[in-house]
Length: 178
Length: 95
Image 1 (cartoon, each protein chain N blue to C red):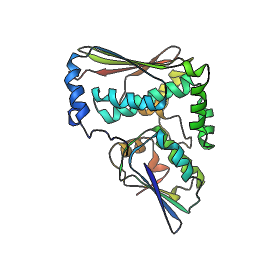
Image 2 (cartoon, helix red, strand yellow):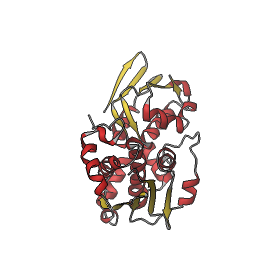
Image 3 (cartoon, rainbow over the protein chains, first blue to last red):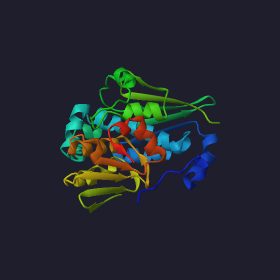
Image 4 (cartoon, helix red, strand yellow):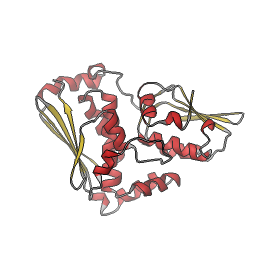
């Protein structure tokens, strides 16, 4: 069975207790991931630091998966929908991760903490996208099997989500819980 | 983890723990079946991501969008919040 999230406060989980001890001393962290599995691990660990861990985990995971799938691996939204419907999405991800130019690309995550805010930046090695349209999109009744990640991140946990042009850097600003 | 039981034309899908992108392959296997009705039991689901929403919508496509043929049961906590936010109560039967 996969590991489960802590039910509430960071201090309630064993990992959270250790991380919480460190948090007052933390100023900067840099992390790098390439695969979706690494992204999931990264999000699980890093969100122990953030308010509302289980919702932050969703938001950070969505941003990381977008950076990998759409940014680094250049699988567009319509293409992803077709691959999902044909049951070929996982195979396409694996194939692209193994071949150039995709295999050299990474997602870089930086965390900066001061007395006022936690700022997370998620940067991919892709060409960017129309992030203004994506941020304006609401969750509507829709048959599409994908395309909800950014809206979920924004609505569940990251109201101050933004991007830097050309769209390959997502920036999340959170009030600091110190 | 994902398990399915089949009874009188109803397939009940039990997901345990995190219902996320890691289950796409197993879920696709399930979609090869053709029951009259699907029930997805969320009683033991603690977390969903947008991939889980996508999997449910592929299930809905298999029954030609007939809302009453896909039932979502036992929703609570984060999965409930996320599915309602995505308006899934209007696309599925939530019981």
